[in-house]
Length: 374
Image 1 (tube, rainbow, N blue to C red):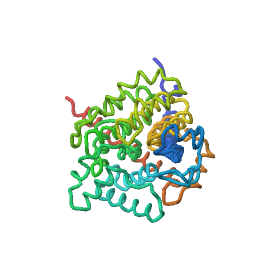
Image 2: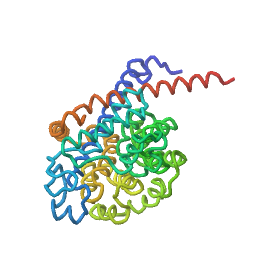
Image 3: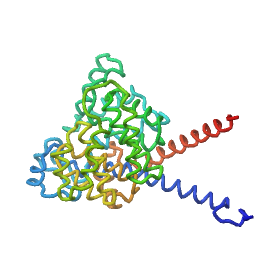
Image 4: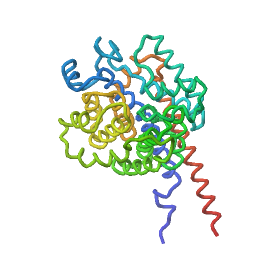
């Protein structure tokens, strides 16, 4: 009979060390998720709303942070490394997730988004609310109930800011509920909710230790389960289109991938295009974050959102190593304090703490159920 007391793997010290290592990894991956989101957003900032041909003509090939030129239709003249609405709204959702103990208050989210746009207008920015979010908040201000304000929202606005929920919640049905609540006021449709669930679930699965292929498999299944959420609107689903293009993407050369995304998959604000493009980018270039994000920036269309979503998933996989330390410093220095970029380590730590608390509560429930079995 073996003596467990002499087995280092079974010692209390070893168990404590393993817990410390797991906690450190979670903190690093949580922060990496938000840094990756900001980096993908900033890389795509100068090329958003441009075609691939226009990007090549005006910038050559984007391979790092580049300032927007004066002809940029949304962000003219913005410095290299500047983030857009994707990062700012994601960090806003992070704050609300933390203050709500893992749940986003829909009324507070609506007001914060209205206030955010007002600040952007005051700064002279053209980077304002997206079509679904703008329509929903206008309806809300006119007295429409929150659950109905976003009844037509099927674009990618919910998905672009959903990463904090993927950090704060372990995978499962509770994640679906949290994402639906966060999407309710602006994107309360089967397409809007399930697309956001796909993004949050990939992040959550990666933070639980899954590898990219398994994380995507599980996330697609959860997204399919979420297709019954919200108001039904016609249109293909994110999960179905990802399953369709997934085997094709595996055979597309890296040099041809921007064209594949732009001309075949699509990179518009529609969830079925931009979210699918980000999922495909993540899987195809999981081992090369810079190539993945620069591919998004060069593909044209909604480049900042595709980059932000892919970057968040890549950060959940690689942790803070998703971008070099000097890139993190640049992002912190370039962006205004009110964007929240400088608070990424703090916000990530608080989101990770929520996740640990949720895991502990789930464990207690499972132990209680096991103990009640005769």
